[in-house]
Amino acid sequence: MEDRNRTGWKPVGGNIMTRWADDIDPHNVLPEYPRPQMVRSDWLNLNGLWDYAIQARDAERPSAFNGRILVPFPPESALSGVKKPLTPDRKLWYRRFFSTPDTWQGKRLLLHFGAVDWKAEVWINDKKAGEHTGGYYPFTLDITELAEKGGNELLVAVWDPTDSRGHERGKQKLAPGGLFYAPVSGIWQTVWLEPVPESFISSFRLTPDIDHDKLTIEIETAGNSTDISLEARTYKGTYEDKHEGKGAIAGEKGPCGRPLELKIPQPKLWSPDSPYLYDVVIRLVDGEGLVDEVKSYFGMRKFGVGEDSQGKKRLFLNNKPLFQNGVLDQGYWPDGLYTAPTDVALRYDLEMTKKLGFNMTRKHIKVEPARWYYHCDRIGLIVWQDMVSGGEYMKFFQHMLIPNLFRSITLKDNKYHLFGRQDKAGRDNFRKELKEMIDALYNVPSIGMWVPFNEAWGQFDAAETAAWIKEYDPTRWVDHASGWYDQGAGDVQSIHTYFRKLSMPKRRDHRPVVISEYGGYSHAERGHLWDEKRAFGYRGYKSRESLKKAYESLLHNQLGPLVPKGISAAVYTQLTDVETETNGLITYDREVVKIDPETMRNIV
Image 1 (cartoon, one colour):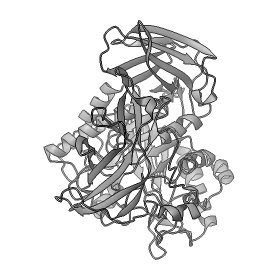
Image 2 (cartoon, helix red, strand yellow):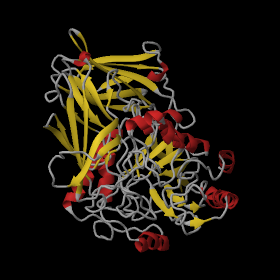
Image 3 (cartoon, helix red, strand yellow):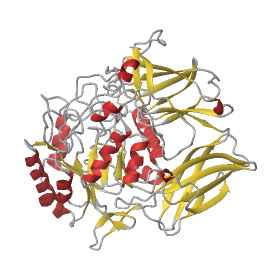
Image 4 (cartoon, helix red, strand yellow):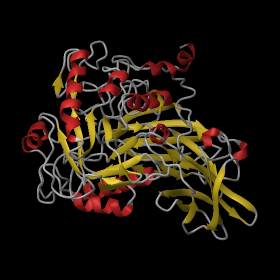
């Protein structure tokens, strides 16, 4: 704590915290490499203490700053050291200084942001470097021509409308409560610098094909790619094993502008029970040798749909039916909000998900940092990835009563405008961000399902959206309308059930049936609550024992009998408490597991 005091930084009190808050070193914040699927050896982490100022939205660059903020924790969070709201009429300014190693001279300099919510404008040495909108996706600026050999000033201005303008923002709300949580603004993922050659790999797609024992690599380059070739080589295990050059199993070379296919003989398949990952090294080479090199990894797996031995449509993994026992994961932290205090904390939620007996997690209306997906890949958790919701919020009566009275309703969402987005600008922004999400996460082996719409929130053209996703990424399932207004599209018939006994819904067509949300059983663990006076859940229990018995009955007497009848997956609500919502299996501070893992596994 002495070192913290010298920095002038400390978490802001007032709410519960996680134990990992004590492990934060303000000089070395989230030091892990932020992009595990595209690794270069040289990089510089810019996390840490920055100057900050909050002022009127239309004001010029601040002449003085309010204090110090710990990046990448959002200003609304305790761990930022600020814990102040950013309202839509205000703008948040960040400033820090940096210099680069002498060994980087002569190279291009890329400035990477993991995510900034919502509109970010960036200056280097008083010159505009660029801007980005969208609060959940990485973006990169080439600052080579703006950076100087000595010290440099980095200035970032952020405006965030939260729920005042209809933008994609997930569960954030300026006035949180019940199903909706605290707003998150500004920088909330790692900021970092990377040197690259004049011609370099800017992105790539890795597509496994287990039916033909191959991996297809498609790359995009920046700079002059004339007379440059693409080389790739795969290895057993992952690059973390430090066995570079050993265990090579395949290698190919080809023209830079064409896909490269690598044969993977007798591939070991990725699954929750055996999450095997291969290492891959991708290089650009010319007549003089190596131009650029990145390291990545992939899993040989296939997400499909087929009939089981009884002729029932099921979700298949690697050409075999697999029942997916999943849990809803909101991705909020009491001290960091959207940002986990440490990488160990980030892993904890996923490792505990596995220990509790789940083989799938549904990432609910949030996109996580790249390392979250990396941990899912490593430990073997299938991910159902939600698109971040936007548009008008659902009113409570509409949210709860309509679908639970009428079950899964089939309505043409281009004619039914109770929740749908009507404005063209909003729809265009949704499509832009949907593509950004898929582009950012395409290579993640564990992602099996894209979920563009949840419970009709902002839903429009759901069938058309599902068709576009399947064309853009045919390797994964699509749940086009999770829970409510089914358009007969996508890969699954998706049901949410909270206030009714679980039962086999009437099949609408040939699609497999999934219960994409159920449960919501609540137990408020005193001493571990965000607000001791307020606790919200769908069905409350006064003790851990009564919660355990209710959960056991739910699985054995309700869900269990439906699996042989055709239910292909089920997602329990939810992994952790979030603020005043107490229907988690784990408390918000991650201190109490309400049903111990051994009991949970036996129940499953």
